[in-house]
Length: 407
Image (cartoon, rainbow, N blue to C red; front, side):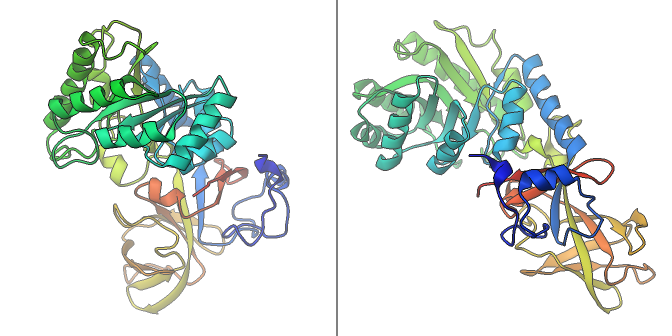
């Protein structure tokens, strides 16, 4: 699939809808404020984006980790290409639909961070593996019933890792006995091969308040890998996969999944799966990331539609346009009709309706109808999902690319 040939029309919010292709628009190098773009409009800061991609690739490399960035954050193949070019092992998926999209754009290594029990999806993945010897696929298992359903749907080998969870967290086994039972079920299956252990530490109860919970869980992950290896459970594996890591505690993952801590009977793939770092943000991840050098790359441009009473302004972006599950947007700057830019001092978001944002504005502020207000956002995952084609803008305000998403 060639994204360059796609016609930009009414399907894509706030973009020039004259039928030019993505390639033609890129070639035109339009200015963001030259009058061809509407609002609201989500943009990507090109320099911040490149900085974040290179920074995380270097960080993972310096810590001796393979990296399979979680592709669910942007669902944008163009960004996967950049991550892979910077040395990513592969791309992490959350659903079978993601896997199909990744394969359509040539991703050769996919880690599915979920148990897969859909028979149709399993048959499709088996066919992909048969057709392409370079395709590597690994997914979670966390129950004997899941193993049973997977085995029944397959007619060829499939690599799986036992997922470890914790009481009160998301998926994954809760106890050593449950982990052993799932591993036993895999060993008894006809088609599944146990190649490692994995999990996600971001939803552990109490993890936000005390990272001790995360350290303890990671110690358990490493211990399970050793216990399974000593019991010969990885006999069919060429390499043992030990994987963890979202976008909040990846420093602890690096500290736990060291080469010294994971000296096993076979080579070990120590696999990190951070995703939100791609664009970072101005609120949620800005407050919690272990990598403080990341820069926010998402910007949402809006215009003032109404100043109906003192202290209140309405902009043309609402719940359909901006993420709000992890905090309301942050007004950053104002651009007036003459192109003068100033900091949005004292202006704050108070609430969102479907298509409008409510701003609290100091009574002495000159904000008026037609002014552009630039917003910083929180939670990139729920920002990307609202936009199908996102301009990438350089420091001069020139659009240098258009990033296609597939939500």
